[in-house]
Length: 185
Image (cartoon, one colour):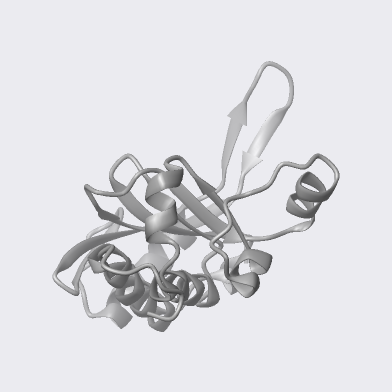
């Protein structure tokens, strides 16, 4: 089924019921792991540029406030990433974990911070779990940590279990400190 305004409201109402929280319209606010999270399901939008209209697909977005994260983005690799790395020699940030580096594309604003943060196996494991739960991207921007998933139809919607898992992993990402640099911690 196509995602429209009515579908968004019905989907969020159903998720709120499964997550055992109230839903009064708009977004869902959840308190999990001593943090406040906001869940939004945005319907598709059309952006009018100078020439063609561009459609932005529907998307889920789970977010929470953070104060200490520079901008970063981790998403699953695709063909475009392979082309940019192997033909145009534009490489993403590497965490020195062959499996993680091969599976995910990492973009960071502060390389020094990223070298301390992403070197920890617990961090990359948390990110892998969020992306493995069905999200397409984990990122930090403007003092918010977010997980997002593009939605083509209602069949692509996330389950309440996937959302609970993502909130748990996001909480761990926020609480991890820089007290080690080993890949095995």
